[in-house]
View: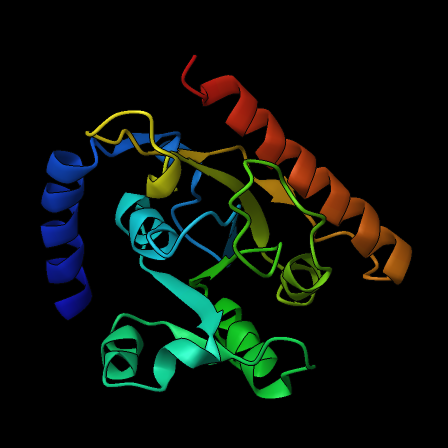
Length: 198
């Protein structure tokens, strides 16, 4: 109930302040375990993607965000911390529990914000978790959320959901995970190219 209330408020605010445009939301499976994998440009990305999605999204977020009072707010909106740079087994277990419960997990496969407009190589964790959790992966692109690079005073932010990628039949070995990670970033890149403002 709280999540849906916050999402509704954000939906109104984001459409007014940022002209939020949502494309391809029908590509999010209506049920079953799903990983939404998105490029990461700014701190606006999680609430933008969460607002645009048709199902509640449980985001893996850097642990530093949970060190203040706001950590309680993030937790109430289904986010949970992950310690970057180490094998955070607790966060991985929590992510797999989300998928086991047929819910939606939100991940930024690059592992950090990239403000250059280019895509970095994906860390293997996003695809590895999807494989182990038997989830479909929805490549997702966010465009225009880097407000420091905006060309106008009234930003136009787009969240684009691509067609799901099936990883359920993959063996989960290192080569397969790397190949799927490359495919994922390629799909995100295609979404960005197809929907960028000219």
